[in-house]
Length: 136
Image 1 (tube, rainbow, N blue to C red):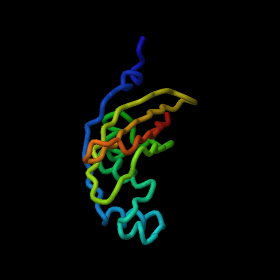
Image 2: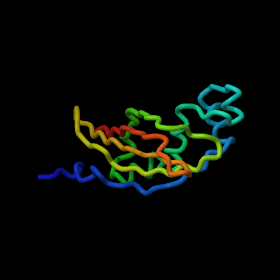
Image 3: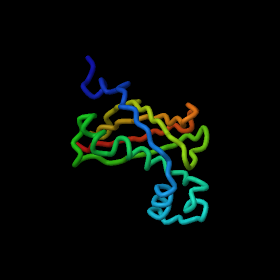
């Protein structure tokens, strides 16, 4: 018998695009307290900048509703990035996501969401995995 949570595995998320702009790189650098000149100018992108891209497209609430979660009980568990290329100023990033895994541990639901980020040249530049936890 398949449990309701298990049917979410393999569920595709709506793809979205994001344009990497200098102002957003700068805002992120200021927010994390790392105002290196190369971040402020957009010459380089901070390693965790893909979080901005992630929240732009799905936001915590939208994804939670899609997965049928009680947002008041949701925690952001883990987030990992596998870099396969560089994200640069001016790139148009297209994100494809899916539910990679679901499980229950210590009476909490864990949902792992995998996202693949492609640049405008259709090059896979990053794979992101985030774990969403719903407390019971």
